[in-house]
Image (cartoon, rainbow, N blue to C red; front, side, top):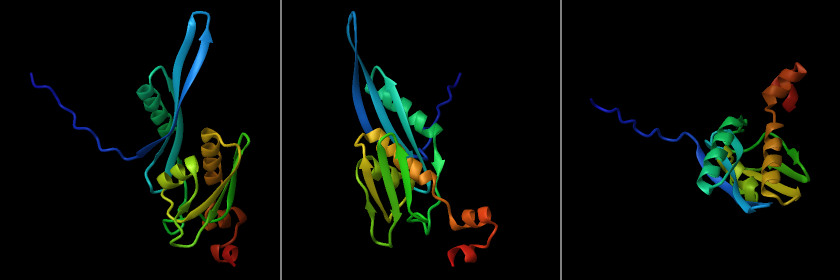
Length: 169
């Protein structure tokens, strides 16, 4: 009897671990240690997701976070394949992230977890600023919320019942 060997599928999404934290719960029997992982998953073509996983071991937490990120994948419109259509502000907890379009050749001007999200989403020229909280999870979630609120000129024209030329002036 011949056994089927499955060739490993090539991954369609890149993964980037933003944060791994050790979480300790103190019980009557002593301290119980678990790990929390935050992971960004993206294809560099406009799809990106953020996931959080918790487990007793770090690799298991990362695996769960990747599954969570794949479930929460969103699609973002890229203008000219490099930037956003307009300025957007995203909030999560006390964190606030501002995202602005930038001229060609600027690069990604962002820090920490926001940079990871913008890179894996596929942006090449974009400016961002994090305000408020410094937690990696909240700034990453705020960046995703800002990206969710971005609309293309075509979407705005459809909402207002006008043509794209009327919207752009």
